[in-house]
Image (cartoon, rainbow, N blue to C red; front, side, top):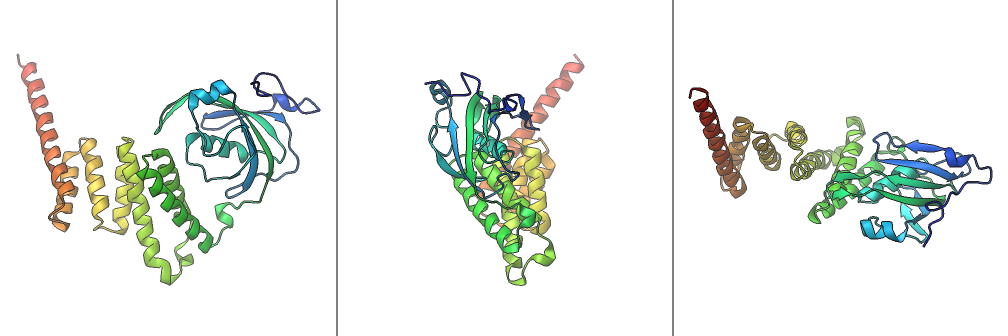
Length: 295
């Protein structure tokens, strides 16, 4: 099966679009326009996009089913609702496209929470889309509803071990809440708003610990503790992150505080024991190294 534009050049009638390329600032993909679109508006968060992603059989076999929607057929996709790195690549392209545009997308090989991702080239065709809204255009109710939506799907992804999707969802939900000024939060929602921010920081930290991003995890837990100093989850996860960074004293302090707040917390007990074993191992290594210096 030959995918038009992958195995053969394809240009718009004027022929000038074939040389028009855009490289994503993070280097994750390169987009080459094959057919120009019309108008000036582009899809935004929440836009319903009618699109077609064409992947040749070899590419589809190499990556399995990398998208959250069927390939090689017209589908409707909501921008921002994909939960894989490939969906994120499509979203990045869609945000730069005009109605009717056709482009070739080359996704660079990379490592992600899903493992090592191979290079993939596909054709993206955008037929139509509905208007979307950037976060700065939303009122409190819209931001709040979207943040809760993302938080819920973040947990679904986390439980499915899709750390990419979980991190994306928790991160966007947190950014939405942080964009809300305190004076915008209704008094009746203030308590839940604060608790949700704490939960998002600690949930994001849980993802980062699994991804071995221990410094980021510790920072998110610290932000959670600034709002709720008695958050057992934040203390435990920060203690775990500190332990992985070999900051044993800080780790011990957090885990001991967990034990003070919840004397029967088995996870903290287990982590304290593991911490003591690691600290002892480090001390033995140091003693051995010092001994060799004087031989």
